[in-house]
Each structure stands twice: as structure tokens, then as C-alpha cells.
Length: 188
Picture 1 (cartoon, rainbow, N blue to C red):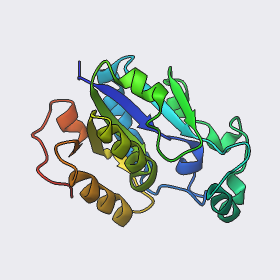
Picture 2: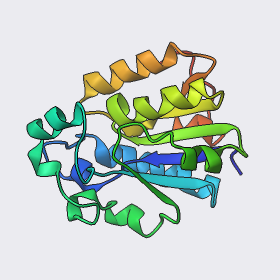
Picture 3: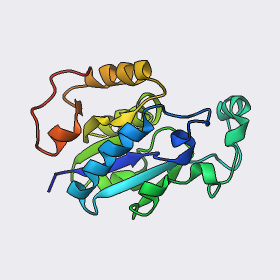
């Protein structure tokens, strides 16, 4: 079994639906990578969901003025995990923030000391989760082919940025995490 704790970031309908303004064009490819990872982590998996706050505060006011469609309650269809993950998700963490490195996630990941990240979007919620986890001293592995960005360039740029944080953060592939390949020397 693979070591560490897998956190699957925001594999939700709002990012999967091609008609959504927040669609991640390569969501299906990231989902395939996540599906390959899940069996190797057993019950050491946390799914996260980005949800709107009851009342935006601070700079979030301007954010939701730009994206008013998203001001929906946590049980709204757009915030649900996609069907292929809804049934697999035993542990789900909701947060009204991009970053999902919360006390709850830290508690779940701490015994393993290694946080493996997959999901969407690489250039927002994955990045915003990886950095504070690394600052907390947790080894972070971002699985490039189990992530998707707002677009291909944003995904690639986020991976390059994350790779600058070596050895705290390492960019890897599904095959490498599963022990099927050799380590990536740099993001691409």
C-alpha cells in the first residue's frame, strides 16, 4: 500500500460541467488519475469541497460579486462531488476557502506525515492547499496527472511554481506514486 494521506481536492460538479464558468477542461483526465490512486490509499483519503460561505466577508465580497452564481448553499447540486466520487468519499471536508489545509485535514494527514494531493484546480485550490501544508512541515506530493487547471497553461505554470518548493513539495505522476515509474526531476 502507498504511504501517506491522499487528499482529493474539489472533484465537484461545478468544475466538471463543461457549461460551468468554473469548468476545468481536463477534469475527466484528472478524475481518471484520482480513480487510479484511490485503491492504493484505502481509508487514508479525504475528499474536499469548495463551498460558498453563508455571508462573504472581506475581499470575498468582490469575489462573489464577480461570481454571483456560486452563492448557493453547501447542499446545492453544483457543490456536490461528481457521481463517480460521491459514493467513494467516506471522509469529506468542506471549506469556503481555496486552501483546504485546515486543522481537520492536518489531523487526518498528520499520522502519515506525507500529503498526496490530486484534484482541481491545480492553479487555485491545489496550490493553496500545498503551500500551507509544506509550511507546516508536511511532505507534499502533487500528482500532476491527477490534477487539472483552469486551462493547460495555468496547470503547467502552477506545477512549475510548486516544483520550486523542492524538497518540501514534489511534483510527481500517478505511476510514480504507485511505484510504477521513476521520479520526475522537474515539472513540465
